[in-house]
Length: 81
Image 1 (cartoon, rainbow, N blue to C red):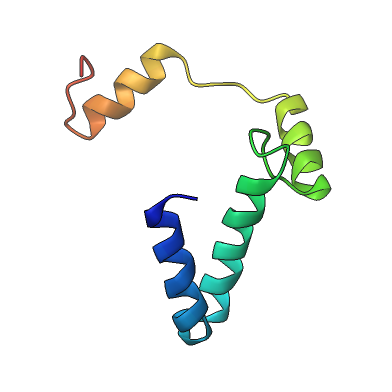
Image 2 (cartoon, rainbow, N blue to C red):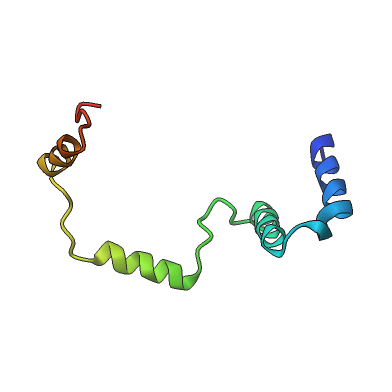
């Protein structure tokens, strides 16, 4: 364990209770994901994966390049950017 990690863990040990519940949960998730064997995989719930699959399968039409240029022009943005 390097010095920075040791310092961070010590600070968390001494000041962690002062953090909000949301911050504590976020930090716990980051640590768990970092230590997990599957840390390189997306950490999505089954419900999130299902919703993602559903949206991918939706029959939606994407904007054409001309549609995008028209929106840029309408808002005064140079579409060549």
